[in-house]
Amino acid sequence: MTPHVSGYGELYLGGLRFVGDDYTTRAGGGAVRINIPFAERWNLQGDLSYDRIWGHYAPLDDTRGAVHGFYRDPDRFAAGIFAAYTSVGESGVTVNNYAVGPEAQLYFGNLTLYGQASVGQLTISDFHGDQWGIRAVARYFVRKNLRLDAELDFNRTDYNGTNEDVVGAAVQAMYRFDETPWAVFGRYEFERRKFETSTQDTRANKVVIGLRASFGSDTLFDEDRNGATMDTYRAASVINTK
Image 1 (cartoon, one colour):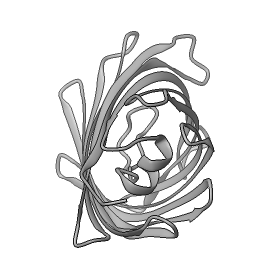
Image 2 (cartoon, one colour):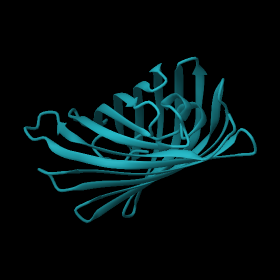
Image 3 (cartoon, helix red, strand yellow):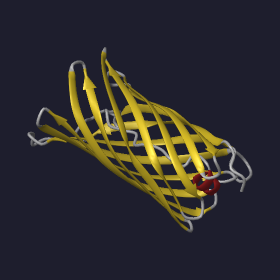
């Protein structure tokens, strides 16, 4: 297949509940990703995403941008680097961070294995905390237009010698209607935050449904192997992680 520009936009809506809480708050957001191939197998991909939780609590917003540069053999693998910047706002307080690192995908028939590692920094007013993280994703294509995902993520932030760890997990199913650009998906996310000095943690469960519109690809499988195949972790509770 001749390399060409492709990508997609998606929107989602659902709910989030913190473990031990009696309230379910609303969650929604969207993303746009565009992949530009150049020099045969080299690719440049740009991402923009927005996530928000609101309802019972004060609104919390997460705006994120990322750039990926990678080499891809659509029959074997893709490998490169990414850089991401995130801004989180709540009640007049803005938190920022950036992350950079390597990423790679391995292709085994209908299975895609995706790994990322990163280092970065968290900024809250005058505070700067170092971060690092790892992420693993598996995508299995039951059919060309039926995709199942599983994801694990770990991120650590150093607050002047005290570590905060965030563990995330997600599963997703996506179906694209044949010979159309439209796909629907459902996703469940779990997230756990904990300071090493505390015996308590914060856990959240999130369930959403969404709609995706793609261009420049024929199927979800084609999109994964030839299009905007890279992404970054999006926190379930809209906290500041890469």
